[in-house]
Image (tube, rainbow over all chains, first blue to last red; front, side, top):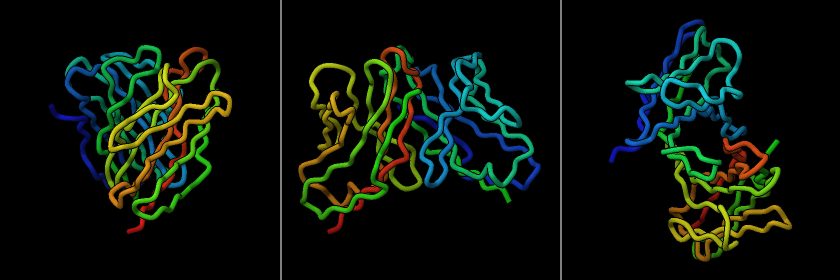
Length: 116
Length: 115
C-alpha cells in the first residue's frame, strides 16, 4: 500500500515563476492537508481539502497561493510569482476522515522549494 | 486558539539512558495530543496519540507519553535510548471540543543520542 506521494521532491524556481506541487494521498484517504516547514519555525498549516472542496484555508497566504483537490488526480498546491521567502519544505498529509480531530495524519516526503 | 510549546530546541542523551522530550499545550476543552518523528529529508511519521482513557499511551519503537491534565503536558519518554532514535520530534494538539480539529504543531525538538 503506497504511502502519501509528493512530487517533485526538489523544485528550483527563479523569482516570478510559478511553482506547482503535487500530492497523491494514501489509497482510501479523501482528506488532504498542506503544511509549510521553515527552519526554526516548525510546521505551519496552510490548507485542508476534501475532493473538490476547500474546507479550511485559514493558513494560506491571501495572494499568490492556491490549492485544489480535483475529483480525479492529485492535490495541487500552486504558488504564483514566487519570491525568495517562499523557499521552504512543503508537506502534504492525508487521513481517511477528519472527524473531530482525533485522527492521525500520514505525511508525504515533502517538496523542497528553492527560489533563486 | 490552541497552541503547543516544546521548550527544548535540543535534547542530548547517551545511548541506553532514559529520554524525555517535553511538550505542553493549550486548548479549549479536552485535547487530542500527538507525537510525530521526522528523520532527515523525510516527512513526519506518527508515533502515538492520546484521545481519552489511560493517561499513559504506548506507541511505536518503544516510545510512550504521559498525559497530565493538571499540568497540561504530554511528555514523550523512552526507557532506553538508541542512536537510531536521533531525529526531530514534534508534538501536536487538536481540540476535541472548542478547539480546532486541525492539529497545531510545536516547533520541534531535536533529539541527539550519543553512542
